[in-house]
Structures are given as structure tokens and as C-alpha cells.
Length: 477
Image (tube, rainbow, N blue to C red; front, side, top):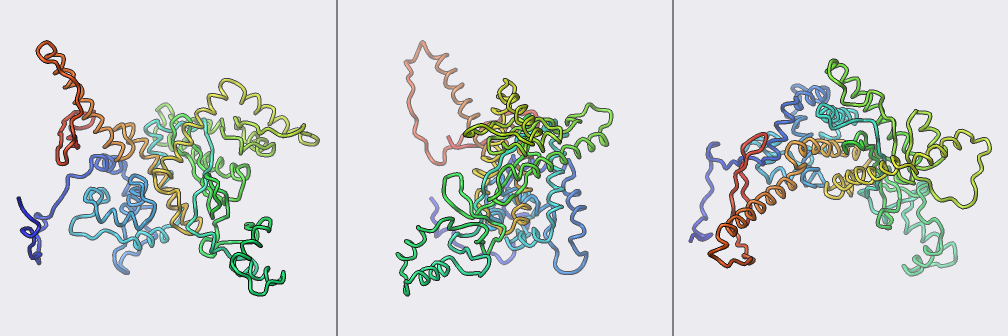
């Protein structure tokens, strides 16, 4: 047995490149690179970003292919910050291979990733997101006929205790101290300030207070009932495939009926662009994207209002939005258009087809939130400003769309999911072998099931054939 002291040696001054440790690469990322390279992803983003790079001035910048792949890693590995992405890149040989960084090259620092994000504008990030939608359309993973819209709150990278007055710039504590002195308390204590604060109404109005670090953040109530500075992410999801057709970032204090128009418009433009793209690239093939664009919109009760329904009806889109229970009787004087839209929507929702669409909305739309924010690592923002967050969000959600392609090819949309499938395959093969052994030896042996303890360092290797390559799976037993 060797010891740690035996392995201690003086580091070499020079190491041959051929002697450096190299891994075979993760099978998920290797297959993902095949998809991106096959579709010309690097050439596309390099052409988009040419105007942001100087030819000779300064040191070489971070190439667009490495930058966008690095942000995709944030989704696939569930990393929320650019610091975490940079650390994970430096630590993993398989991720080095995925982004295309050689062993003798240094990985990008978090400041380099951040500077590149600020350098490349928001419109370019949206074009990369549109490129991913085209990837889905080519594989019949986007229909564009039935759209579900919903929103969720993302906690901002700003603390409630740091908010200041919009008019005077006073902090919250300074403001309370001034109120206490005005009420006759010359030297107020913390208890006095807390007592005075509890008696006030509308203590943290967004019209009066703002965050000095993230002025786009708004005071909002989160899903768990707590109050934080937050942003609102709104998704438009294809209810036939689960792909996110459009994503917008809104102020957290805006109601759903005020933001649905923008998200629906972005989704409509995205579907129209895909229809034109198919007509140009594949004029003789049967279209995979609905040529009539978005025809049906499904949402929850928060999006129901007479004005919103009328506006959506004018866009020739049928709505399936449950109606809120309202006290008393509604009056429709001078609102005949709203009345007709509300009654037609009510009739559609109560039908069998409408109920099925609402179930699909709960399945597909909520799933995007779970993958992008709960396990995807962006439930809390680490960036400041709407544009910066939306840039990261576009590529993050774009990676979710790419995972639909990977799930169709491999049966898994994330590296962790692929590892779980491999473990299930090993367990299933082991059970089959055990059952076969029991069946053949049932007459000679009295076997009973026992729990075999697992030992560290004990591995099972399984070789299987898929539709795309022969692969090896090694996992702990």
C-alpha cells in the first residue's frame, strides 16, 4: 500500500503535452457538441458577434462559441452565478472538452465571462435564442399553434434593507428616524423604530422606494409568501412539445394582464419567423410549424380580465383562461366587446377540449419553471439590471430547449438525468441476471433475496448498443 508521503515529489518545470491527463469527455456533452457542430453553431455566433471584436487591438477575447457554451453549462449543471460557471470550467476536464479549451490553455475567469456579456448586446442573445428555436423546428419539436403563458418571480440580487427613497435618497432606517423625531421621540431606539414601522400602511411602496444596486428590481411577494426585491420571468410555451417559444423579463409589480401582450407578441413573431424560415429552406416539404401562427392561448386565472381578453381576441387568438369568482353582478355598459370576449372564453373553458388544454398548461409550463429555475439554478438572480439578467435568461432557456433535442436523442435532457438512466439500466440488467439465475437453479437451491452491502470502489461495467453509438457505462454498485 502506498502512502501520501511516498507520492510527494518536486513538481516538474516542464511537462510534455502528451503526458498531461486527459479524460474521454462526458457522453452527454460529447453528443451535444456533435449536434451544435453539425448545425454550424460556432460559425453562426461568430458571424453575429464580429462587430463586437477588434481584429488586432488588445489581447484575444473570449470567442463567442466558448462564451455561449459557458452560459449553457449554467443550465445543464444547475449553476446560478458566472463565478460558479468559471470555477466549474476550471475544475472539469469534460467541460473543457465541451467548450473547446485545450489542456495547455487557461479557462476564462468570471470577469472575462462578465465582460463578454456586457460587450455583446441583448439583440444578439435573442438571435441565438431564435437559432435554437430553428433547431427545434427542424426536428418537429415546435408546432406553434397552442401556447401556454405563465410567469414566476425571481429573487433579485439586492437586499430589502438597502432600499432608499426615490425622492430624497434616504435609507429606510434614516426615514424612520426622521418620522420618530417628528412624532416627539428625540433619540429613538430600534424598538421605537420597529413599533413605528408596524403602524405604518404601505410601508414599502415601489412608487416611493427603490434599490440603489438594481433599480429595475421591484418589491414583490414571492411564491412562499415572503417579501423580496424581485423580477418577473414570463414564458410562452408550446403545449404540443413543451418548448419555450418566448421569454420576457418584466417588473415584478406588474400584473399578469399587463404583461401578457408583450410575451404573446414575442411568441407570435418567433413563430412567424420560423414559418418564413421553413418556407425558404424547405419549400417542398410539409411544414412542421403551424403556418397560421398562434391560434390558441392558455393561461391561469391571473390573466383573466375583460380588457385583456378583448385585446387578444382582436389578434384572432382564441383564449382558454379560467374566470375569477367576482362578488355581485358585472355591468357591461359601453363594454360590449369585452362582454362578448368574456362569454366566449367562458364557454370554451367549460368544454372538454378547454379542460384538456388547462391540464396541458399545468404540465408543460410549470415544467419549464422547474427545470430552468429550481434545478437550473436561476431562482435567484446574481446580476443587476433587466438587460443583463435577460441576456443570461435567453441562453439559459435556450439550453432548456436544446435539452428537448437531447431528450429525444438520448432519452435524457441533462447530464445528471443521463447518469440516472445509466444507473437504472445497470440495476435492470442486474435484476434480469439474478432472476435468470434463480429460474435455472430453482430445483437445486433454496434461494432467498438478501441485501448486499455496497462497498466503495466496487464498480460494474455494462456495454450496450444505442441507435447512435456503442457506449460504456461504469457506475457504482
